[in-house]
Image 1 (cartoon, rainbow, N blue to C red):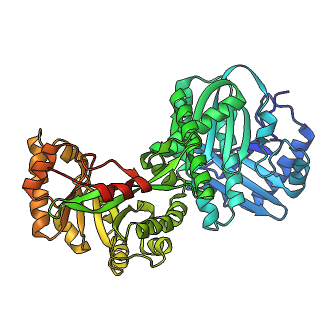
Image 2 (cartoon, one colour):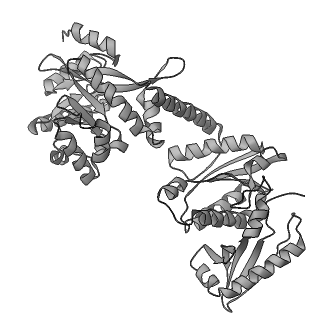
Image 3 (cartoon, helix red, strand yellow):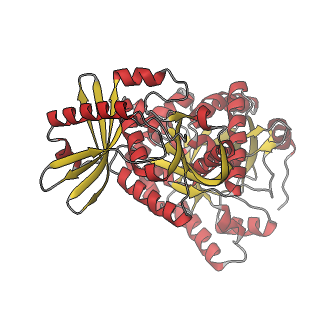
Length: 499
């Protein structure tokens, strides 16, 4: 006997739209049933449906309709409409049946699906398509105290069952928000069409999903690969992807980095490196950008480009910032209160979060770096900037010229610095367009009393040209690479420039 799931209480319904009549029936399959139990449940189903004559009217405009009747719940899911008929499934769940099912460890009591542990070691004779469905907004539903979440999951499970039943070999609920489907014989094109129809239907439900699909003979390995695809979907804002070996490498890498971030949070293993700001007019180091680093188990430095995006997407960035700010202020004191700039995460750019992170410790020798995109939300940006500025702290726009702002738009935000993106500085000497852009940014910024920092300065030629154009400050390897604290402290004392 092949087990798809416990569905003695699952029926198919054909509703006649013209005559307002319906018929319930069983569908032949490879599963063995107790016919007596099915007939009893079918009679109960029909009796309940008679009590709620408007059920199928509701189904015209909804993908799922739920009925509660004393000790029974019925979940009706529309499969499709054809001519003057609606074809759907009806799943009846009684307390008695629920308790009966719960005796078996291999069955998930909420959905009636198999549990992951009961299919993980099942052997397939040859490769099958295996699909993982993850409910993307499950955590949001919990946090928003969504009513009847269990009913929604049950209805969704029944819809999965109804939609794919003809093509399924196994279906299991893996975790609270994940379902694993093992398909029977189905070709790639047919599967794609089926899934696209599935995605269109569930748009009507309060559920958003991510799908990962792989063809494999080992269910346990297939699940790992599907997890990698789901992670890839998150990173690339996708809802559906078929497995590629690149995804597994990506998943392992992102998992290792995530664990490294969590370990660093627990043990406060973050370090700041400092890259100097050199004032052309004053001919001295006037400050530095503080750049966060973490170390892997081998002692290798992990730069922000490798972990900040992941920390933001994982919701860990605020915890990191709350931890490292004290270290930033401590370093500043040891540097005789030298001006330091700090790159604030886009996720933290609101008045309330900034307040939680800095706890009113901001002062005139701290500069907060933000990007152009972060000021697109006008009201939110103004509130955050006003809070930062009230302590005398400065605001700097990082990577200027690559976003959506113009210098005139920045006037309403009381910006202190703009940092010309290094892509323009890199081609300043060799590209007329880059030269024209840099020249005009500097000229207009000077007129608006906004100081200009050029990032990524690496050659004497770039330095000389920026000096001619009236740039205020330069930053880059020509002056120094980012340095750990002790080396930076030594660098300030010994620094000389002869350009």
